[in-house]
Length: 283
Length: 325
Ligand code: SF4
Ligand code: SF4
Ligand code: SF4
Ligand code: SF4
Image (cartoon, rainbow over all chains, first blue to last red; front, side, top):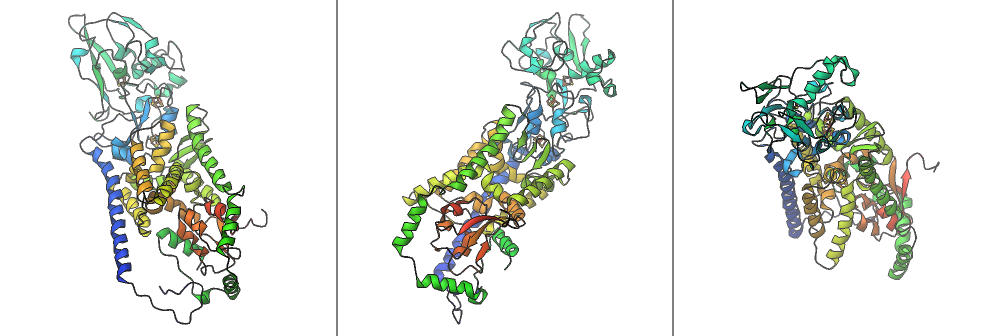
């Protein structure tokens, strides 16, 4: 580029030679810029580190795009807006922090604290998602595939030990919300406000939203009055043991991995947990 | 050289082209000559500036902008906290009274990574393109982006520290931002993850405001520390691809800052406050090619230069509506 002293009409534009100083400056600026580039790209790539070795480490909201070991599609499709967070009536959905790397801002559910109980009926989070990261292909709770429940600590299970349940499932202070059809058709209440008195604990079966739907379907009152979703496959049942005094929770093909059983399980830590790497379709 | 080409060159980080004397029309040359014949004395210049500093309009656009920026971001917060469903989501994507909106850069990254476009995202993206064509493109940066506001405050701190010799201003080559743009796009395409979002302060801050603070704010603090101590406005000037995306939209926008050379004193106050001072190179004596020049699309339309110019040589203009307004 030719340079002329500014504004003054000069007859001969004098060719500029770069002095050593200028060249040095240019070189330093180039090196600095390269360092900035490497630094920032490095920082952003560090976001991939949390993916190593813990694929699928979090329970995702209903409809999250993923297959058995890989949720890459979900992570790339999610635009990290939190619209799913905003619509959930039980506030089950949280957004991940920077320790999740590229998963920063991506929704997850901490089932033990607050699971999805489909109290929105219509999969509101799926409807809210602008990018289809929560696939718009599912219409009913029974079609979701978040994971698969597993009796991880049979030794802790009250039913296995033949124990009754008296009082609040998770203690009087636990903030977990759950919708009880018998209390209020629309509004979830605190689990602590709903004490139990059961000769043998069967909370995971009793409160399983899929099992509740089956009961509703059988009673001729399908959820939201929509018979198309009736009846879903059974998700869990209690299998009595020969002694007649105790029983084992058995997870069945219809389990969607919503995590209600994990949330309500009175054992500490929970005897039943949701396995994120399995689902009704691939076990 | 046309406005478009100039704007694209700025966005790419190339040096502004100085006009040769032959490229400057005679009447303009005469004005420069006139100005040189009757130079403003230092005292006179200072008097003009002091008078302007006391003017009630001295922070007019800045104040309007800060209010807008805070209100827009608070709308998200309030709407979620009070559950009024006015504006749902965050700056990366939202729904405003039912209308989808998607941040252009986030939408681009998601599309490159996911390689699939959902209709809602497309609608949201197009709505936002139209919106920012009307509103100026990089106006997003200075009127909406929450990082811009904290970085602006950090900048005042930087300037104060630098005046006392406690901070330095390392400058980088401006093309590095365009290189970043390409690299982040490629990374999304190749890795299949929206890698840039991990370090995007715009998304992090927007979510922190709405959904509560987290560890990610440490990254924001680190960026601000660098900007305060080492390099003025480094993120927005040299890294942020969001700025380029909106800059490209801004190329087509009729909302611009306009420079009128006749009244200008060429003392350079505007360039000293600007986030992207290269767009104001036209205010240097001998650079303007016409009586009125539109400032290029890398301009964030923040209005700081409009506020500070003691001679009102810079003003907002809306192409095609000058007569109406
Ligand atoms: S399905 Fe409904 S209740 Fe469950 S997480 Fe989504 S919004 Fe919440
Ligand atoms: S609504 Fe969809 S895109 Fe937005 S955070 Fe939730 S899953 Fe991600
Ligand atoms: S068994 Fe547990 S995880 Fe499975 S559907 Fe029922 S409550 Fe949800
Ligand atoms: S350049 Fe980026 S970070 Fe800076 S104001 Fe614009 S969008 Fe925000």
